Length: 321
Image 1 (spheres, rainbow, N blue to C red):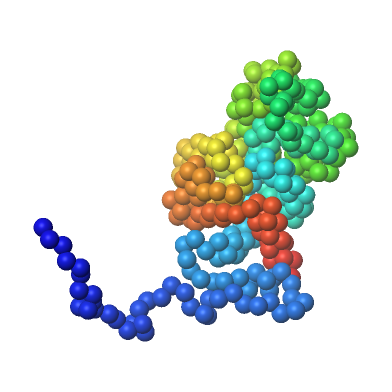
Image 2: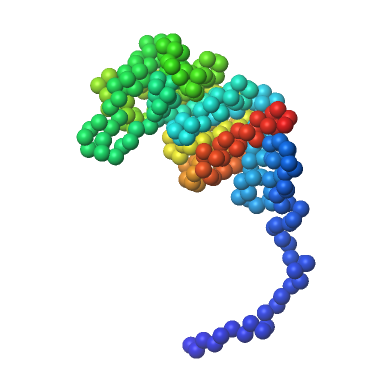
């Protein structure tokens, strides 16, 4: 078959004025006036209604969180270890002071980094070269403290998060003020630690007890289910910097909450913050909100920039700046 070039002179065209456009100057970012506050900055962000418009998502999420706080609905924070590793702990603690954190969930790595910060004001070791020597993850004090907390949890029939927070507060570690877990426990905010056995450095230590660790973490799972049962009328769940464990825990815990409530939680809001878009947070967290009549947001970017910006906007709105 002989192919000939298409005759583009026959192409039909339409007037530009008849076309439906997605971007309008009325939705452009404004220029904040000199001396204006963060509230004005928030309002100056572009209003272009793209599905992936992070600025619009950020503004909507701030409004949802403040509305949940006003209505007395839960605002839960699932925090991966990068919250600590990027130095963002004090920002979350500030939100605790303003009543915008009704529960904190983290994984084993998050608990380790948070505890080491409370102990010595430092965390996160260099792996290169230390795996070959067998020294990676072998800090004695870290293992003794956290595995000891697992024993406390088992002996007292409490969750792992509660036990770790109690131990940090009881021993008055030098940097307790920087510990998310301790500050949550101090304020009677539920804090749960969801451990996957074999994934954390302290599981290599001789004082590790899988039975006690698993028991404490399972109590925390049940506590987290209880928190999510409060989403029947509404709420906001945030997943920040966890791409596997916490999204998986969340979807199982929400299933249990719906099962126990007898009627499904609906019209709640979910959001995921991370460097990259990952399958589990997108499906288990973001889509869960929209699947059940609410909204789900995905905000992708450098967390050391996005999280401070997000929290600053949240506090500015709260304070009426």
